Amino acid sequence: MTIVLKDNNEAIRKKIADGGIELCQCTMFYGACWLNYNETTKSVHGLGYPFEGMTQEETLAQFEYECKDPCYCKDVNEFINKIKDYVSKTE
Image 1 (cartoon, helix red, strand yellow):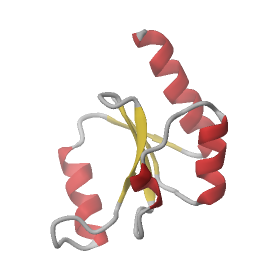
Image 2 (cartoon, rainbow, N blue to C red; image 1 turned 180 degrees about the horizontal axis):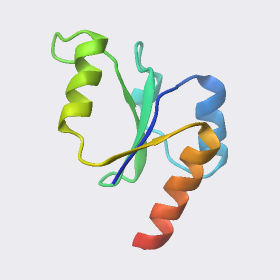
Image 3 (cartoon, rainbow, N blue to C red; image 1 turned 120 degrees about the horizontal axis):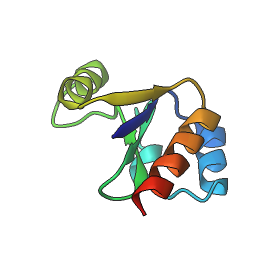
């Protein structure tokens, strides 16, 4: 499962970290406008920063194209709760 929040700023990252969820450094990269929980690394990653010469829009479009069954969250609280629920079911 891929859990996605189409928002990213310092306050959101702080709230996620305060919730006990690990954040990758890429959440702070210039252009990282979305966040997603990666079940393999068990951490939150940034999305949208320029990747391999693509624009932000192209990077996000590629992510959405390749993503299988994404769960888009309406706010950071839902994002945190979905991650915690997922983790509790897989431990």
